[in-house]
Length: 407
Image 1 (cartoon, rainbow, N blue to C red):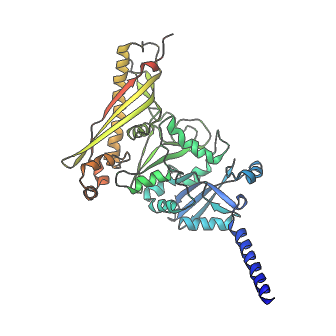
Image 2: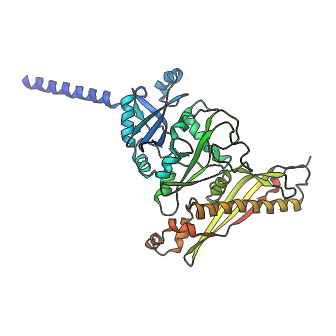
C-alpha cells in the first residue's frame, strides 16, 4: 500500500513536470515577434545600434494565422536598441516587448555604409551561426542610416511587408541593375580565396531630387534615380567589399557588366547611341548572354581573357532608317559590340585598379595555373588581382527573328 502511494506521487510529479515543460517550451504565433528585417548602424558613441522591423498582424491576419501559421503582415513597426553585441541587443528587445523576437522569417539584413566601411566580419559570423537566420535572406548595404532605411520601407504594390524585400531584390531578373545577394552568397565569397564579396546597394528615393544629374539612364545608383514618388526605399547597383570592408559601389550599367561576366544576367535593356545619328538612341533587349573566361599568369601578372556572346533584339528605334537592311544590322551589331565592350572594360579596370576587389571571382580561372594549393595561397590572389590585365572580346548578334517588321 505504501509502495502504491509512492508510485502515485512520483507519477503526479512527472506529469506536472511534463505539463510545465510543454507550456514553457512551445512558442506559438501569439507569443513571438516575427522580424522582417534587421538593420546594423554605428552610434555616435561608437556602439552598435540594432533596428528590428517587426511584423504587426492586422485583425484579419490574426484570425487566419491561428489556422495557417502565417507570419506575414500588412504593417510593421521598427524597434531600435543600442547594445554591445547582436545577441545582447535581442535580449534587451525581448525585455521590452511582450513577445519573443524570432528571426526565422527575416528577409533582409541591412548594413549602413558607415558600419560597412569599418568592417562587418563579426556580425557576419554571428548571423551565420544563428540557427534562426535563414541563409537565403538578402544582404543590403544602405547609403543612409539602416534604421532610416527600414522606417521608409513602404510597399507600393504589395500588402505584405516581408514579400516586399523579395520583389525589391528580384529586379535583377528584368533589369540587371542589381543582383540578388543572399547571406550564404555573401559569406561564401567572403570566406574563399578566389573572390571578394558584394551586396545589394540600397537607398532612399527622395522624389527625384537628383533628377537629370546623370547623362545615362543606366548610370544611377540607389537614392539617385529621378523617380517622382514619395520617400521610399530602392535597390539599384552593388556594394563592393574588400575582405569585410566596403570599398566602393557599382552603378546600374556596371551591375549589368558584373552579371554578364558571372553568367548571371537573365534579361536587360541597354540603350546604345545610334550609329546613324549622334542625337538618337537604340534600345537593345538582351535575350541571352554567355561568358567564357580563360586566364594565365605571364611573368607573375594575371592575364584574363573573357569572351562574351550576346543575343539581342531591337525594341525601339527611329523610323528614319531601314533596320531590316543587312548592312544597317551589321553596323548596329558592330557598334553595340564596341559600346558594351567599353562599359565592361570600365567595370573590369574599376574593380581591379580602383576597388582592387575581384567581385567576379576570376580567381577560379587563375588557380589552374598553380601546381599546388600551397602555391596558390602563397601567390595571394586577392591582393594580386589589382595587377591584372584583360583582353575582353564582345560579340553582339541581333537575331533576325527578333527584328521589327516594316508596316
